[in-house]
Image (cartoon, rainbow, N blue to C red; front, side, top):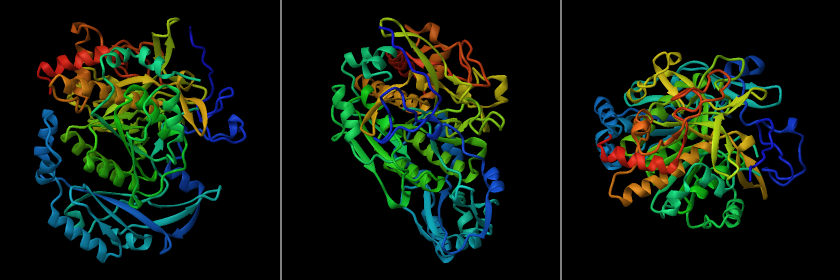
Length: 549
């Protein structure tokens, strides 16, 4: 039968009697935090805050220093070729110079900071009193207090790196405690597992015995998963294997303390499990600030426990510090060189990731040229419960919708030049693909001991990651190499869809993201569109057999 959906403003809101929130008295919608609303920009926050003066010895700063690669031109050629190397080969040929790293560690220690580095890593972790960091990097670190009592520190100047540090360090993150990653979960019935498998034609893959066996998906997360009760209750309800033997949670004091559980991690894990129930999952939990998140992401790539990354985090690209962007981009280059796929949520504020009072902007890291950015749709089932149509997700009243637009920093990659839009002005354009994200047509989940409904591009990204886990399993079964960086194949399939046995994508032609319209073919709202998983699998096989990079 046709499913009827309950609409509501974006946010972690109550829907009927089913809530996706900890068991407690229901709050009115106006009192519930809207997770998709951008926080004020740093400059605005400073204008509104009370200046407390220079941060002193009692203010601890935790910094991540990104390390320069060796042979950057050769690494760029490797990435462009689509070829991959082992982690050991990467460390030996492209990793940071160990002697220079040791010199940088000595300079940091002499400057009053505690600094550590693990061989194979692309990041030095350094921490200590704000005054020591200010003196070492010749910057002014000030403390501020907002009207609600929240305090933060920030350095408004770019750091000056001492010679021994500059010789090996490309950027520094963690110089303010205000800006940070945010999740893209929007709201707590919805699509149950059988709906998801039918709607996106995933069921033929599952019927062929593909369940994610032998594949591991890794996720950076910033909100905690205190126990397995919720997700195991979800698994039990839908006849899925328990998570206990499949899930690993990674924590490290050096990565800071994650936020209290808000449902984002549970949402990601439940969507992955319903699509690829035998896939292993490894979660790396960190604090939401850039410095700590950079450390966890670096360790996730260094460990290389899985071939697929699913990421539901992001930040306003123009407001993201250059140090964080540089560190993250270098780590992401390493993941591509080592053969990992990476799916990133494109954001939940439409084309206005930085806020309605700012010009259109996209979300970092979805704007990186070597990740697959996943946008969002509103879905409509047929009376048979299968695919009918989709529209670009847009919520003009709440200011939410599928993230999309052009980067302000990264030029358009070669694979995207075939669809380059004039509005992109020669820069990287997102998203690449899409899937259900509208909270009004979202996913059924279990969180806080209750059942509810959730959406957001943070639901669309793990859906794509889990589907690619099935495709990777099929490719291995057929003696072919795995997906690796997905975009060259995705754009080849999009451009050649009429010549394939079936179109891998549902082309979304209606709707908008508050600035850009959905159109035939690739667009700034849903990219190539959502998946037909069985056709996508067949297309990938043809791409690789045909010599695709």
